[in-house]
Amino acid sequence: MLVGIVGKPSSGKSTFFKACTLVDVAISPRPFTTIKPNRGIAYIRTKCPCKEFGLTCNPKHGSCVDGTRFIPVELLDVAGLVPGAHEGRGLGNQFLNDLSRARCLIHVVDASGRTDEEGNETKGHDPVSDVRFLEDELDWWFAGILEKNWKNVERRSKTEKIQDVLADVLSGLNIVKDDVSRAISSRGAPSQGNLREFAVELRRASKPIIIAANKMDIPEADANLERIRKEFPSKLVIPVCAEGELAFRQAAAKGLIGYLPGSGTISKIRLTPEQERAIDFLDARILRKSGSTGVQEAIERAVFEFLGEIVVFPVENEGKLCDKAGNVLPDAVILDGGSNPVALAGAIHTDLAKNFISAVDARTKMRVSADHVLKTGDVIKIVVGK
Image (tube, rainbow, N blue to C red; front, side, top):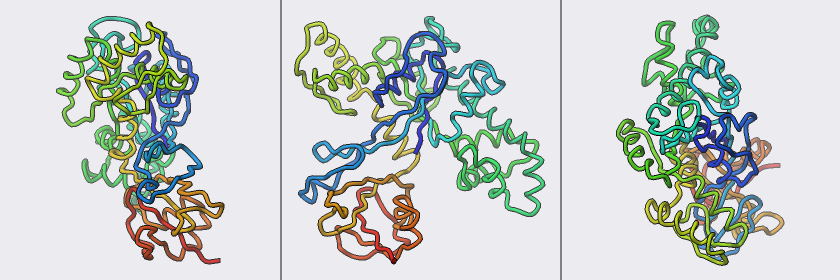
C-alpha cells in the first residue's frame, strides 16, 4: 500500500509528509528542496477488537491506544511538479516515474495563494490553477505512455482482450485490469484518435486524487478553500494545516502536550508561555474551527474511501485471539475491499494461500467459506493443510 504526496514546490507537501511520519526531511521555502523522494510510514486508525473482547492486545506493528488501532501505511513524498513536467521540465520525469507505484495521490495545494506555480513567494496566486495544472501533467504523462506503446497495443489486441493488453503494458504504473475496465466503461475503448481523452479516465481510475488545501492557518486560505470547492464540486477537498499537525506531534513526542493524530483536542502538560501562545493560536485557528488539522483525515480517506480498503485481524487461536506465542491480536492486515479469506491467507504468506482449507470467524466460532467476503474488524483464523 503506497500513497503518493504530490504538489508544486513550496506547497507544504514535505511538511505534510513529515507531519505524518516524523521522518527528518528537509523543509524550506526554497523550490525543489525535495530532490529524491522521501519514504516513510504513516498510520491509519480503525477500531481494535480488543475492547470488545475485554483483552489487552500486542500489536507487532503500529500500536493500540485505548481501543484505537494505528496501522502502518507507506507514504512517498516526491519532488515538486511544475508546468511542463511531462516534457521533462524541472524534475518532471523523475517525479512522474517516482509516482508509478502509488495507488492514490494526495495533492497538497497552497490554499493561501502565497506561492506561484513555480513555488516562488508571491501574493494572490490562484490555487485553482494548481489543481488543474497538476492533473493536466498527469494526463499528458499517461497519454505519452499510451502513444509510445500504441502500435504494440494494436497488434496484440487482434488476438487478446484490450483490457488484458493495456493492463500488461501499463503494469509498471501499478495499473490493473479493473482500472482499465473502469476507464473503458466511462470513455469507451481507446483508439489512436482519443488517447488523450482515454488517458484522463485511466488516470482517474488508477490514481485517484484527494486535494489537501494546506496552510489553512493563513487568513487568505478561507476564501480560496471555498473557491476550490466551487470549481471542483465532485472532488474531495480537505482543509489542512500541515505545520499545525507537525507542531502538535513534535510537542507530544517531547511530552509537552497530550495529542493523538486526528484528534480535535490537545491537553497541555508543560509549556513555556511562548509555546502556550503558539499552541493556543493553532488550537483556535485549526482544531476548534475544523475539528482537526485534516492531515490524518486525508490519509484515512485515501485508504478507506478512495481505495476501499479494509482491515482484518488474523489469529491462530480463535478462542484466545492470539498467535502461537500468545500475542493477542498481533496483526492488522490491510486488504482490498471484497477480499476473501484466501486473499487474507496470501497477504500473510503465499504458502498459507496454497494450502488453504477454510477459515473460522472468531466471533461466531463458525467456519466461513473461501469466497466469504470479509469486512473491516473481522477476526479470522486460517485453517491450512500440511
